[in-house]
Length: 602
Image 1 (cartoon, rainbow, N blue to C red):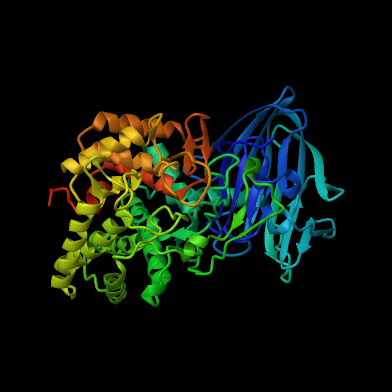
Image 2 (tube, rainbow, N blue to C red; image 1 turned 45 degrees about the vertical axis):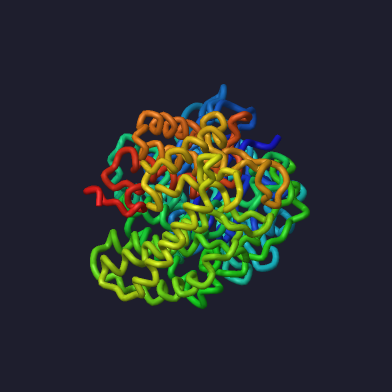
């Protein structure tokens, strides 16, 4: 039986990540990077596509949690004969191979445990050649990939899988260490699993202690920050949108996308979430990744890049995987990389501006690149594009895209004014005013009483909630107030906000989708800015209840079926949670920062 998305917890080492189910089964792991082929792909198929189960032979009651301030998962199994704790983690390493460690620790009595692992490379397709290494462990090789398993339990081959039965008594620990390497390299040596646990916990706790958030929502904010850190590809600083591909936005539907890449649309909110929480080093890494990724000819700037800034993210499908709950197709790569989305220019300029605002001093670094991007934007800002949501139903004049083009020129003007930079201010001011007038005249529909999805359309879009958040218009502007009210009436489902009505928007994909969690947080931000604080706090605290038992959020939520949808865990959702928590409780408020309003109101 397929598990729900919320049944999974995340472990990772800032290079790759695994999803562990409530029952102790690891059903997703891509190695050696987040976007590599999956070694365990049962999440999108069956156990035969790769999984690693670990549970009492006769079942038992389970409960789980993360260790405080760490990405170390503990699952307790209570049985009639005794109790054990399964500890899952990936060592937070600086050097050496990537490893996944599972420890079974006896707490009382004795428990007979059963483990089974099915190793499959390339998304569950390739059966590796498995050999025993002089009694020390198992080695599995296929093509360029190798994994090695070291354990003090007895594990034997059973057909094309391996299984073991072992008993754990109170005070005993049985360890399993799974390591990755290239098949042409030396096998990774065994390590002390308990020492690795101690070092990993210490590393995570030191990192967590840097958190400066001091409001009433510390636990969900810190867990979101840890998740965001876990989604960061350590060698480059790029932040993956999620660790999964093709978890559906509608069960059984085809809205299934690969999110194991880095989107520019997330840039500024991510930067502020990190900076405002005390993680300036991580924010700096993200900003540096951003500058490297967009470097080059401005007409080749993409909306999404690989973890190291790769540009070729060719989209294809995997026919041998049936998909999560038969949601087809399973996709790898993302064709949205080839789309034109004008909003990214505003995101890049805003991210550079916000970084300079948070780091007083000369703001010349990166300015030549910014000038080149703006010169290109001057030529193309009037073009139709595919918009923030990457529709596949044809380009149009999206309101949000024009708003973000305005942001690009607005931040450039402010950068010159505040940081002693050079630029054609008069020309930029003229373009900024032209864009602003066009959006107000063609993007606002008086009959709908709202800014609409695109010029000439009456369909609403939750991206309009960003209009006050980026400072295009103040929150108390009557058009903003009526837009927020219209979105609340039209796009709200059981308190949550949809991106848009898929029945009214030709986005090129059949079927519907759930409520979009980031948009729901934006709605709470707008309520705060409108002075409707009680409503905002009520919505925010409702959104907190949608996290799973270990504090993780997916991309979307189905309020009717009361379950998560979309890729998981979703960086955009956790970034939005952090920022809304700051808007509610902190001096540093992203809604004011992006609106270029300081605490003194200027």
